[in-house]
Image (cartoon, rainbow, N blue to C red; front, side, top):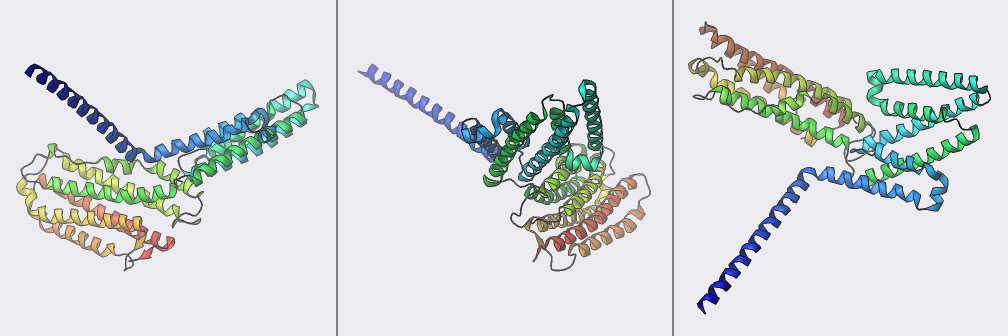
Length: 417
């Protein structure tokens, strides 16, 4: 009897153990799904939108009234969805417009060349088509090398080259070429329409919002880096080579130029949404971004000086400790205020509220450099002087940034506090 009880208990314990393992596995899987969804929510939504667009455009094969208009060229609608459906709404709008314009212009010129070359004989046909293909390809490709054109119109020019060559060298008769061009243009137009509708109506992602939030967050990244540098430099009793200062945010700001330009270009195409209108001053964000990169290029040498193994003794650093740590906190506070003003789209009560504080910080640095360092007459003084010089450079750059942020508020119509 006791043996039976022991066996039943063992079986029950085994079942409980298996149940706990199953629950633990399920909870871990659910935790992973939730965390992944939080981190990649926008990417998942974008993927779903592309899938919806492909389903809708594939219906062209199944619906006879639509199939009659596009024929076998329905594949061009699918290609259009794959090529122009971008993460941001502005990018999809710009690519869609350039695809239609590039297809129309390239197809029209290609048809014209084919019609002119049709009755010119074999040699004349080859000469006209070959010359036109060479000239159009060379001129269009050269235009793609011009930075301003490449930045804004590269996709449209590429579509023009592709369409022109496909139509011009097709070898079909003029009437067939015109019908083929019409069907392809209709198919491409349907693909563009599907992309724009799904991108604007299903959880739209705005490049303007992304640029706005990124610009604001970069102030916080640089502020944290300056504060950590000052805290690390004057931490008594610690080796500076082992101090952990996170400068990844500063490096990301330094490498943000291309992404800023792309986002600003896409934002100009986006319709009115939230507080961002058609004439919103996105150029100001590019100017502020350039100043932030210049500021980051000053903070990185500051970190290099602090991380250097050749440092003045603690005794020499001590007289400047409190003042420099206070200056570091004040600089961080100023940067965060500027970033918050951009994020919340608000202005200070005074015209440029941060400039007086920056003037005060600069005065403190000037007094410190002329009084405390006069008594130091050895090589170690150069290290401290270098730190103070870089701090003064940061102050000067912040003054310019504060004025740019205030100008942005005036042009964009930020609310006053």
